Length: 605
Image (cartoon, rainbow, N blue to C red):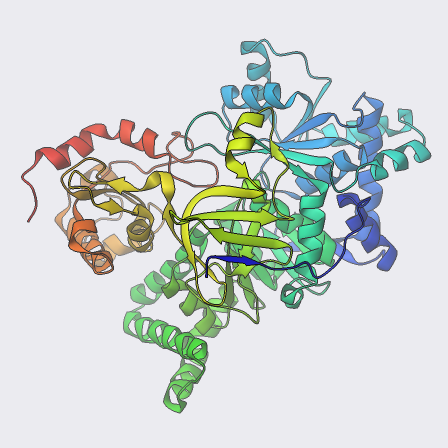
């Protein structure tokens, strides 16, 4: 199959906007809890649709009072928290446009977004963010902002206090309802693996239509008013933002936690029914459970249980589960699976994974223990999901079929093209790039993939990331990287080899998990990473992981040599984007000596 377009399942009025999703919830059941707030550790307080709407209206009126007009751009720079979504809706109720800024952004990155989007005011989290924004405005000589408010410094209370000076209720209602599906709701800047970030103009229609199509499809089994989730990935990212909005559309309850290290206790106290995460989170859940079992002398039981879960899920996909496998699965349900689900709160039955490939092994493992991970695919330019696996239509190893209202086509060179209600209006201030990337209504994603006979999409790599070795062999690094990175003690991996005689890799170690592994292997847990990079036991383990990954590719595509970097790749160092994608050019520059060391050594056999 080369093309699939799935028709919409609902007609959406052209005069709707995102705020109508909240208005609908208030009209249906004003007491329905839309959010859970953790005011003290382990204790969550519900926020009803009516309470949320009232605060949104007050804050919107405060924004209007200080001079935020219809169409003005307001930035939000904060970690994931309740107030992020609160201000997002307040900005829309004021008739304005939200511009997310990653809370890890540098002054130069902030300056670029503020100037390019013509941001007039910024809501930020704390004094550190205030310093970054002040530095950006001063160094780049930007026009003064009309307001900067700190969430942690009483800034939102200041806005609330200004509400009485704002327009009358009729004017505020006019502002709220003025935008239709075609108006801009937000400008989200791509995290930029190369060059300056581009601003994607996403409309109210992108979010409203995509949300309503989703909750009126088979996904309504996951997204409904009895469902709940904990948000912990960055709300500045389109993936989390879409889930935040579709949850309001569905009446599902959302909690927030900014500290991933606190995630497990938060899941256990909140008890969500579904999760959304990037693949690395699911890898860590699996690896943590495995290492805990090994530390307790139950490594063989975990390994057998994990394989049984994978076999069970695979048999489900094939349509028949043998009786013997059913009995083994029931045994491990008592011994293992229930405990892993308890670590996630005990009520999680579904999860959505995006932002990168999950891998068939992890997908089958989690479905086998009772958590159906629905892998999806999308970009900032497509308001997150173009395709997604659904409860009734799952093919593990694929990223699913297009959501209703969307379409996918495979170009002659294998590039994935996308269209539909998800597709952005264009790049802000870049009509030249918009015309180049959107041709005849189809967006050129830059990803390489294929459609099977049932319309399920598989992504095999990035067009621009294909490595061409000196012998002319094309290598898609993602296929190897995803398998190697899934190991418990490996944090990141980058395959190299462009114009080189063979393929190699740079590997970093996971500081959170390696301590337990080291103790099991008789190595002091506090051994510096610089020493571990040369430790023979560590090198032998990494080699075994690479050997296993190499079995999935030809010899010409296999990793023939590697080096362990003395430090991890991080967002702070500029080697990764805030959405945890490798900036390959930066890593290559920062570790060029290590790469040269690989290729100056004798060629491996």
